[in-house]
Length: 426
Image (cartoon, rainbow, N blue to C red; front, side, top):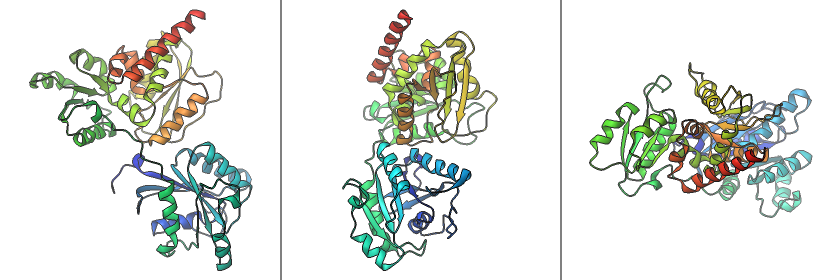
């Protein structure tokens, strides 16, 4: 558990006014000075992350945020960053100075409820009288549902006695949502199932290691007791010839899907790492419906390319070059492809209205973070799919790579039928 990847960790956000004690709580939970603490209001100017083990929760990410009552033009930007952090957290702690509850806290609670983020109240009391008063309170004192838990403590940063945080730890255990991440691929195989992973190692592959989805696939196959053979695309034919029985699943990188589909026996289930990530991180049928919208692209249409991480652009970068090139071929002419990269979802409001969103695999995002992006796109009535599904569509093999997932395949076919009906009325 100690080496769990960031997307698999519980993300805990600390929110509240300036000098309410958020950074002190962060340091107390860490047992070290992870966040800067000062009596000067506005000391925390950007969200601060601390990756750690927190008993009894296990691996977590603590996110300490700027104060919600910051003032001035720069302060407004800090508040906006704090509120944007709501997109990242699984659980939130609203830290109060004593029992101070006002407009910033009410607005935050409303946003947390709207985003369906479980949260609790932590009263950071300055003296015995305030602590005694706070312990007599319940969530109804803040006009909150009875289900919202409340903890009382007196914070002194990393020097806070361990027992003083027992109530906070118990609250976090209560708030923690149930694990909802499905297996990556092992449920697609029988016991001791035969699996081939096709991992091309081209110029964009990291030196000395595999990319994250490939590593996850290998580990999930081992967890499922599968017989896993890892090869490059050039060695796939030899790998198939070496087996006495055909594999029961082939998974490949999206960028070699056309060649692999031509080599793999037609009766062997075939999919891509990107499709597996789409199922792991979000709503695969919804993303399949989003892929169908790409059939309606016309030259000059605007398409948003969303990446969850920032990386150094390659000569033939997938988001900047390959995807736009494939989509242009699909549309029959050049498109207005706009790349938005970074860990935060970026809304797009400028004209002309986008026809679709093509998102990366989201390997650096948690399932909750990716799901929120899907919800945001759906509320804006923007069809959304991901890199691998767009590539498979442009290569004419999307139905085959969706075949291991009947619900997603049916959603794609239904959306294609709907689009044909709409086109007929256009």
